[in-house]
Image (cartoon, rainbow, N blue to C red; front, side, top):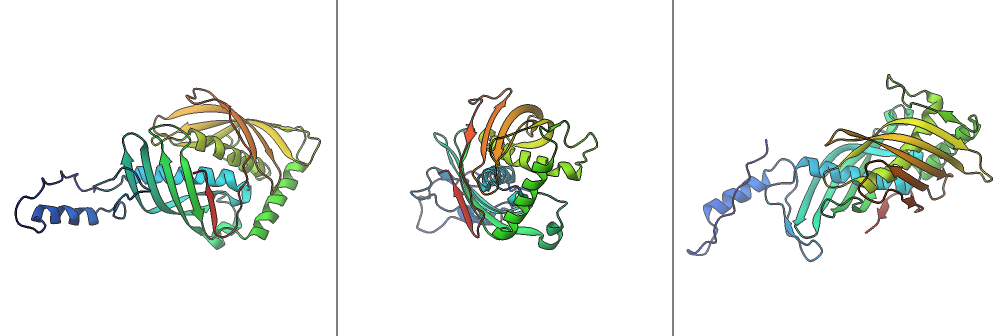
Length: 294
């Protein structure tokens, strides 16, 4: 149970030395079960640190936003990660600017059916600085992750997925992934993973301090013939917003080739921010990896 938020004591006007109430408050802060002590903001951290512990929901929100950004920038379906556990964090609140969060968390491979998942388990730690700008979407993120998949192994997995995509019927037209029973046919797994990769960009752009999205379903997919070797397809996804329970359809256009920058354009319904965006940035999956848009 979270300790009840306490009022800070009035300035002590007696002899020098800490008041008993101040010592009790300090003890409560140290025992807060959710986070590590916040400490002082310093010149690089404007605003005041949270005084009674950071809500775990905020730390999880920051970790998920960082992973959306990491997944997009990696540009690799084989490097996809999801949140395993938040380990520690702290936050600074600035009413005029927003909320800045430092968070450390563990991750695991996105594809739970992968044989490597059983052997490797969780993929180590990520450390992220996330700045939510007063409920505005597209948080600013700096994220560093360690213990990634070996580069050669990742390249092999990406190329295998690429060949599977190239061997599919072209132009490819599919609906409902996963099906109504939540099952993804193994032959369609490459499409789902690529759709998740492109949707990571969209979910990062739409995320705010309180709005969290995850990919619920692909409702249509159409692959296009290209004059080069890239994978080029349009798809429609349903994004589930957790706090409001809203389902938001988004049309996404994705261009991908292993080892090259991922290109994404999208259009979502009921979106308050500009409805189209494109991403052409490139990430790298080496150990350690630091990705940033600060």
